Length: 245
Image (cartoon, rainbow, N blue to C red):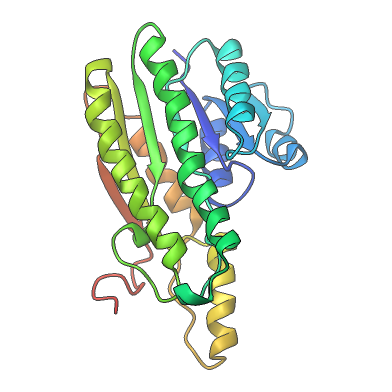
């Protein structure tokens, strides 16, 4: 049986790398992001790629994307709940309230909306069940300086993961979280650029190929229903995480 996965934030970064891996493996892949042109480029005419443009902060548009995908595939086996943003890098008193609200809307409300839709579909379909994989972060455990918006929202995702794991048990819905540290995406490249701008003589932070993160997501998604990775941390070996401070 061919499996199906819907990926939010699929047009770039970790989401794009994950999408490519699952497409190559023959899964039916729903590609959700705001820009249709980026998604169409990623799909590249593949029959198993489903272009579903939607903003995760728009609950109605996101429901339309989920409905379109399930109408085509018949079911939803996995959600990779991935869409997110870093936001401003500054002490809390220098952050504009509108910037905070934007990070909150994307990183918390957007992931809530997607998880809610996936949970409802997995509960209703036959056979019942599925898997939700939330993209957390190293910052869900230990923050870096100037990351109060991102850190706060990623701690919230850990709560979402635990609640879904508990509430999903009666319906065979598993939920896990992957916490990724310094995969070389646009966001990490921007962090490195900020680091070097502040101190041109600094050693750039350790990073790893984003394909390693994609492979970890695939490992979680491909498990049989009786098994679940509750939390996985994958990171650049030499990044300042253990003992960060």
